[in-house]
Image 1 (cartoon, helix red, strand yellow):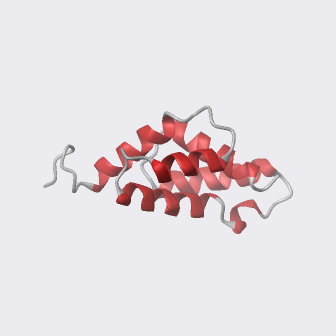
Image 2: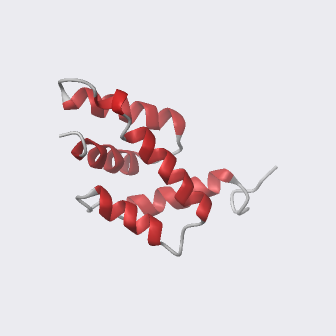
Length: 103
């Protein structure tokens, strides 16, 4: 069984990524968060790859193909919640930034 502090434990990676995302709660542009993650020396390649997957899911066309942006936010939030162990703060930031791509 992997311990929570074991670097090979995938849950530890999402926690590190989640903390990093939450620390950037004030960003207003997706490019700022994407660049911060890409350029971070604190995050491992696995974290960065996981974020790419998260961002692809968050910005997927089928999430936002509705006349009401609120529906897209709800769909995206639920998909991310079911797929990744992210805090509400990180989820809200990702969904908000993804919604800007579809305004």
